Picture 1 (cartoon, rainbow, N blue to C red):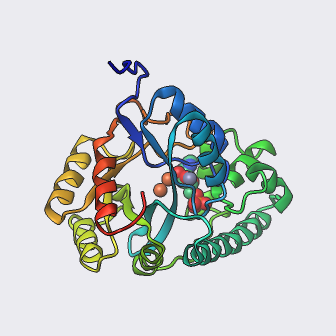
Picture 2: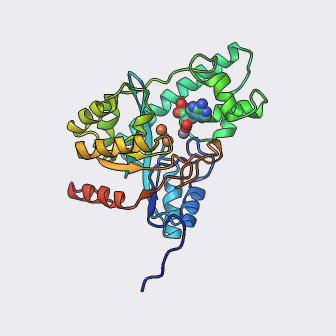
Length: 297
Ligand code: AMP
Ligand code: ZN
Ligand code: FE
Ligand code: FE
């Protein structure tokens, strides 16, 4: 008889996590070790615009016997702000994917310069090196890194406070990032054999029905495979809405904690804010969907 797994998250997965390769505070190895300790059946590493953490995560997974799905999270432009897309089974080094990530990172870098210039105008002299100290040399500079640098220099008393004072629209250190359309991002991902998921769709401040229409449009174009129902920003009603949407459109369901380590102290890997439980059955469905179209899992 197989030994029973008494770890708290045996039978569950987490398909949305961030590491120090982007704006998380735990290294890829640490995230995988934590997942293993909790008993998660699988995790995906989905750093913003970057897959530099994947090799370390996969290696750690092999050492521990922890399933790790290589992924990334990208943003696209909509009339209501950023649409986030989680890509699963992304192959690091794939040319189309590499080009997409490079382009996104270049646009991040441009925005980063604009943010520093904006802060400079209100007398805050933050330089690139001070922010680089927070990214650990990573290629995906994000506002959380800038927030941490501002905190370290005494311009804010918490990451949240730094955002509120400086880094949100209307404040001196805000600059928008140039983004591609969902169609452009998804086309590149599909070309690279990636399974595409509309991440935390209910966080978009879009009018009633827009998410459904957009998901349907992108799915009909063959660009969108799945949608994230289980996410800390989705309450019970939102989860149910997305579950129904997925059933109606024939989309895969996905979910994850959006773990970021200590920059989002309320979020725990696998548990989210406490109630999140993403069942492993969703992964089996994703895998057979991929196998049916001849993609590796
Ligand atoms: P970026 O991709 O550089 O625009 O940064 C987005 C990241 O900042 C995401 O991980 C968000 O969760 C985080 N973020 C956005 N707004 C806030 C906020 N008000 N307080 C803390 N973190 C935030
Ligand atoms: Zn993030
Ligand atoms: Fe996101
Ligand atoms: Fe995320």
